[in-house]
Length: 193
Image (cartoon, rainbow, N blue to C red; front, side):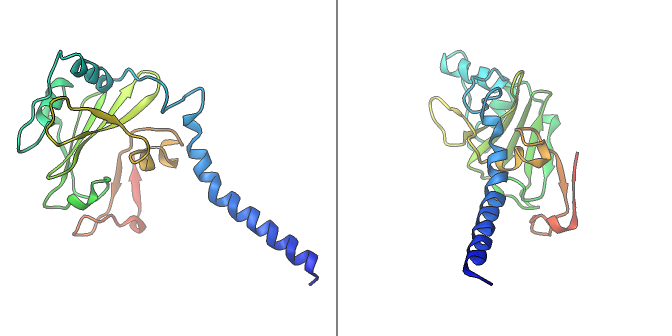
């Protein structure tokens, strides 16, 4: 094999490898550009509206030592406690705190989904904006005078803006088989609904 052919083959392989590695990452960021502008546009979802009311002093999130702001968030977003579903698999970014003995609780209504983990660091929040769809937030469980829903900039979007949501931020319900520890057995198949 001559040197020119080896260099050409090597260069082609490098270009192909770079393209294969970067293409999925670039494709996942399409929703950040116009017309969606996911991370830049102002949101009008119920959580954004609640945060505005908190900022104006119209309402206050009450904190309790057992569940932090959970009860107050559920009340102010009109989410019934009876909507609770328990998730025993480690399928949240708070996975280290989730186990079959300490499941993640999810509460919901038509426009909001609240995830709460015992001894977790944050309340996980997903809300529906009328134009942008699913908007993800976290709310720190540290007591403070003016709690702040912080808009997610990527941690939630790792799963919630993937091929399972057609490459745009979206809600995801996925059933997985799990080990006794709660670790998902992804090789055993999953079911997205």
